[in-house]
Image (cartoon, rainbow, N blue to C red):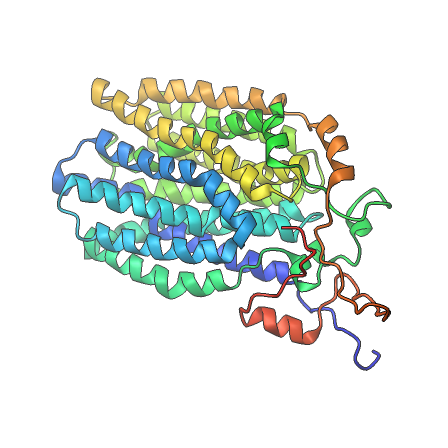
Length: 467
């Protein structure tokens, strides 16, 4: 190698971001989302609150993240995901610590609101925007690996249930808050906004044409937020995802308590259903990560939504533990297959220029599923003493989501109109007037720049770089 020539990093930095995101999702999934049902069972025993009370708390969590979605998306596109994740980690930890001191219902609701806001800012949307920016050809695979952290956190559901029950939910909540600060903040430090800010291109490519089937393409296009909102695809994708989350939200809140109290099995066996679902989710994510960059994404998502409908239908008609485990395995596989592909198909349809803001507006629609699903199931149970009717209704609407995605075709006309008007994402090399200087090779980083990035310092972007 010629002396002084820039060296290509041994590992493309985008994979470091995927790794940090994986661990972040693992931590948050393990501490909260997969453990929520255990907290519900133990807190109901202590306070005697109704299931609707806990359903409303979960719905409030999702409402907060949905309402904040457009603001969060704009903030991520403007300030970068790392700063937003810092704020989220702190709020998430405060919410957990406050939860450990709960005595009254209003403190319980406030603590869960803080947890909701913190979880939203520190994990999913921030990480997805970063990964979408850093990958193109291998976007589905990268998003699948990112989402795997949340799924693998489900393996901790049974041991977490034993730990929470053993040391008490108050001690577990306080310890979780401290753990988020100790581990979460360093992980957030590794996340970067765009490869172009570091002299790289998505996937570590050496030119934009390498990333596209069009040899003349010099950049990846991006649709503006108003243009995306005017397409039918935006709304169909959002409604389709919301339909799936009707099932996901209902089972997050009610599955453990349904198996434990309604079917009469131990809390450990009830929590083991989460482990079964996790295995299915990992299988689905591996399939989605592999197939998403090779096969059309839309038919795969349609099949996954039908799987959600089948899973909760089986729960409604088959209250036997073995069939319950089968149904959650199907639900997990559908969840794992669908989740990364939905993010990837949005990036395919709308580009990455305003992806965070577009995704933020979409969350306003998506979160309706997380709000309506568990609340509806809780109210129906309190009214009828059974989940049967609510599960059947949710099965119908999850299947309806498959129809939404079937009609969510690429907004071809809008894409054609946007491509010529898109500004370059990559910074232009700085040169002195009249002094020719070779532009840095795309896909390469100076060794000092790599070290600078890995140490956590923000790069100084070119003033010509598009935000």
